[in-house]
Length: 291
Image 1 (cartoon, rainbow, N blue to C red):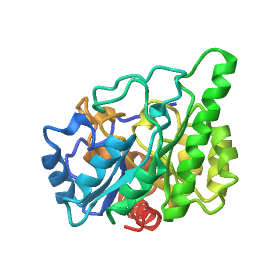
Image 2 (cartoon, helix red, strand yellow; image 1 turned 90 degrees about the vertical axis):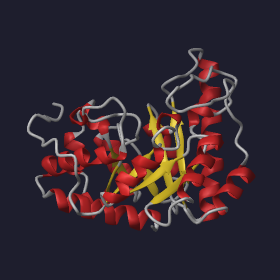
Image 3 (cartoon, rainbow, N blue to C red; image 1 turned 30 degrees about the vertical axis):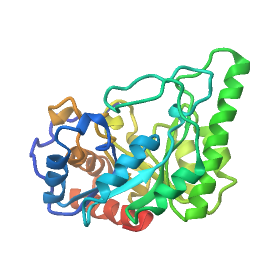
């Protein structure tokens, strides 16, 4: 059963308790016309945010944005698996994200390392991981496709280890494979962004010390039992703006301020106070990302 949103207030303001949207994409084209105003609103509402890169272009943009603010705005950098140049599938254009290379990108560790070291506002490597949603149909090509994604993931995990940075993981249709990879990296800390797996997989991630990130996907998939069972001390809140807009928001484009709906529904599911969810998830974010 999906979450019932009918009784949730449409108030436009957050509680005065500080929140952190741990996964936003204000570095995407979707926000190029009102970026400054959106961030101004967030900071006025005591909301901090992390803009997450998906390739070198958006990673660099995330750093540039973060550098403009003394506090409250941070960046993560990395090459998303769907942007890897495998030569096996065509990279799909996303007008919300902005420019892209149809053939994808190669990962150059030295470029990303230099970018990470260029600013203290870089707080994570991400979003990186595995994505088997769009994939080749032929068995041989599929195996090669998965192999290339795992090789990319390993390179970026090594970079995270070298820089002593946590990781923001993207995983779609690939949780068992990601879990197997992570068993070899005991010292890596991070969050499984936009968690969509089963409780068995969630429990494995939690046992390895990872956090689970929840966003507007909770209105599309039935994740109530997983949210109930996951300790609030291991939950991060996020929006994935401009995607996965909560239905209560009344807009097509998601924005960081709409993270309030995620907080409210997690509180509702776990039968605890809104402010407790906001405070604890903020503490979790500050602990993981050292912000």
